[in-house]
Image (tube, rainbow, N blue to C red):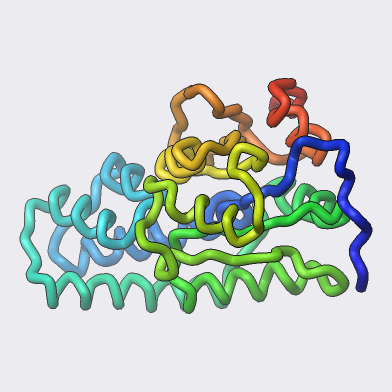
Length: 240
């Protein structure tokens, strides 16, 4: 299918979407696996520690978990723990995956306008592909993304801006002409550091106000015109 030409009157050149907790209800699967790992190691992960892991890399999550439990693990043991968490999440993703409110509709509207899109996630490729296949299944005529960037394909992970800078460069757009859609503090920090405008829709972690960040409780009712307004400094996204 040939997409229509993008509307060049808009300052918006691309939309960059986070995945877990932003497009799909998958962030809780990581929490389930981390809580289970803590119990395997003889402890109980605190709610505060779990919240701190949202949107971070596995290396960061392991450091938070170990500090919270007051334990030390060797590098080899930590690698084994990471592998166990990822296998647990893979099983959950294959059987229990749902869209976040409004996410599917927003992505469909962005694609209908032929705006470049990227999925930018900290999740490693082998797990992200499970979610990507689910998302693609809802878009049989037009691929939902021009580009997907996963956590094991970047020089540094969120909150470093590298993932979003890499996505913008691959799309041939200036990050300043992009809107990033995120749910986590690490993701928001990455998008802002890249120079993008960020629409923050928290799922499991509260987000603090910041210049360049617009906060909403949900993507339900948010459309392309709202994203364009955010980029131009017109906060028209509906509040819920």
